[in-house]
Length: 191
Image: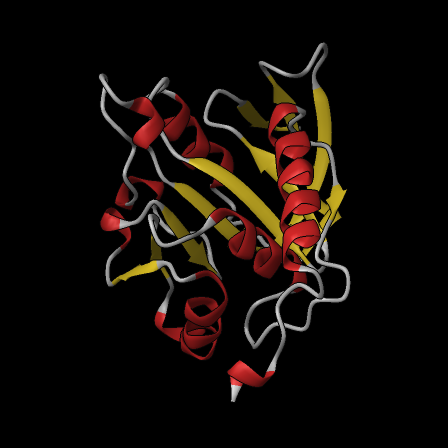
């Protein structure tokens, strides 16, 4: 049973350090940050996605989990008490094990762009794989990063999301105990 698996050893310190790490990753796109040390979440969650979810979701947030993540549902409800939703468009935060169409997620409105969803996407690896060039706010010069486990058309999908700015979806990529964050203001192209 997944409820036997603990969350953060110290919930307050774990959430605080993870929150600072997510802020660092969001404000400096392409920066690889380690989080989730010591977490043993239920499958299919990895340590990084579990730490992000335990930190960013609460009773006031709507969370979408794909059917394949059913074993993690009761664990997340027990540790973070989110409001679970059954479809991506309803979610404030959505976990994905494979890249969905970003158009399925709430992009916010012109009057409320901050209402856009955040996608937490588990990928195979950070620092190896296909090379992408990042540019935009938070980066004084373009930065390159290699990522494994994204679809071949990721840059085109992201460009469609970016064109909606200031609306759009933010993305947190999780691999093992590492994250990289892509705010919707970021330009991404294949390098």
